Image (tube, rainbow, N blue to C red; front, side, top):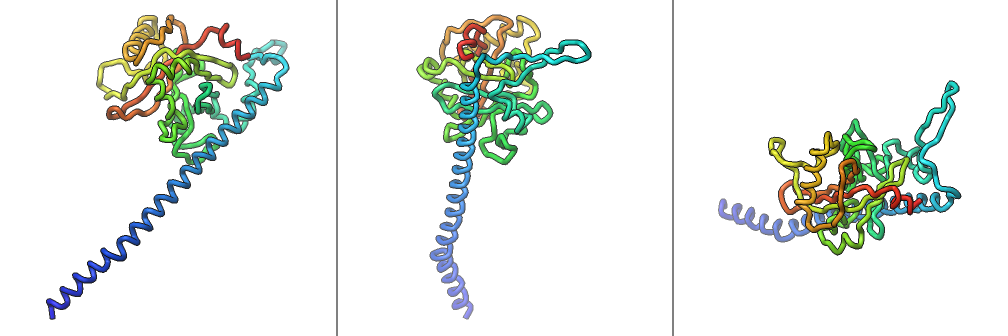
Length: 283
């Protein structure tokens, strides 16, 4: 009798593994597939929103009759006070979200995004879109320690598999790609700016006690020696020579995203702000 019962249990297990398990696995696979489709569609919708925002920006710029002045004036107690004026193409977005700081664009690439800045909440947009909703892709954001006039403006973005956000900047590992895209546009709310790519390199996040140059901590150059050491590090790690010369006092722009060549790896693109004469070509 015990042997018979044992045989029944054994046969029941076989029946489960041969019939129920495949169905269960199929259901789990379907759930993951639906989730992947939903996330992919969500990312597509976010990209469409960014494109719509860029279309509005282009339309506003085209409607400008005269070059936009970067400063305005208002009278207060018989004194003339100069106050910054938001560029007209960004005014609507600044009203929609006060965290909106500017716009980054690399011509003829997918990089064409708003940039957020939250000094009191450093990684707020790591997984939030422009509207403050959850997004696996997040939104490009500037280091909370930076200000408009910092020596180095550091921007962070996810390395997405579909190449959105900063997923495509890894193309700068190839010199030919840099030659096709040597300039990065990064406008603040008040000013149009352009930057020439100085260096592209692989790096990583170091331990706190490691004594070395850490690009993600270089924001203010306290003196010329500190600035020159940073430039030397960027040029030493560079994958190729861009021939761009840098002087103490030049402002830098750094784009940072995850890379998987090592643990806590990063891919970094550093650019130097173009002289005003070059920037004025966009005005």
